[in-house]
Amino acid sequence: EPEVTQTPSHQVTQMGQEVILRCVPISNHLYFYWYRQILGQKVEFLVSFYNNEISEKSEIFDDQFSVERPDGSNFTLKIRSTKLEDSAMYFCASSDGPTYGYTFGSGTRLTVV
Amino acid sequence: AQKVTQAQTEISVVEKEDVTLDCVYETRDTTYYLFWYKQPPSGELVFLIRRNSFDEQNEISGRYSWNFQKSTSSFNFTITASQVVDSAVYFCALSGPVDTGRRALTFGSGTRLQVQP
Image (cartoon, rainbow over all chains, first blue to last red):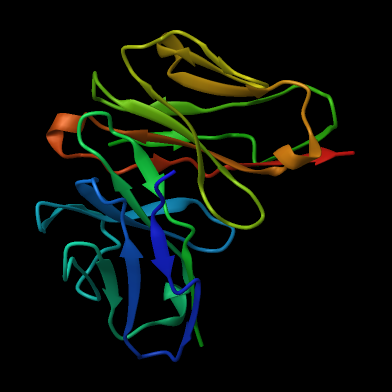
């Protein structure tokens, strides 16, 4: 069964540093998403991406964040000047068009120290 | 605005008991989608079901069943004859109409299910 692949599975970074989280969505999917889950809390939507542009974003997704699809397979989330409160599990997801299948990756646990 | 409420923070049952996880949602959309995901201790989100707002038929998949009631804005999930492997956090989620571009999922706060042997 097709999977959404996320790398790395765990990243530790110093406060103030920039991190890039990487995702390979399912190849025939058209919509891509990032979500985050602070430990013990609910999953929160960050941003969705379609046709090479952001289609929807939440209040959380401010200027500190950016997304990119640098080639035909990768989808990245960049977090600039990381803060302690950015520590969370970040999930990538992708969905197809008509049938609206929605598949999550296994997540990247980001720890800011 | 959309909202999903899972009032049960944690449920503990003994193996073989039936358990129902409640989900109540709010939306102004007439077309929407409802989801259930399982998050085991390993942390990934495992898709369980997707249901659109026009399909009010209840669904059964093995030991799992879902009761969608539009009149009460509820989409409850029942596990029959629970097993220890069912121990996880279960999330209910809601999204808007596909054709509006509002595909973001709004998640509930989750219900932690512990099944004791």
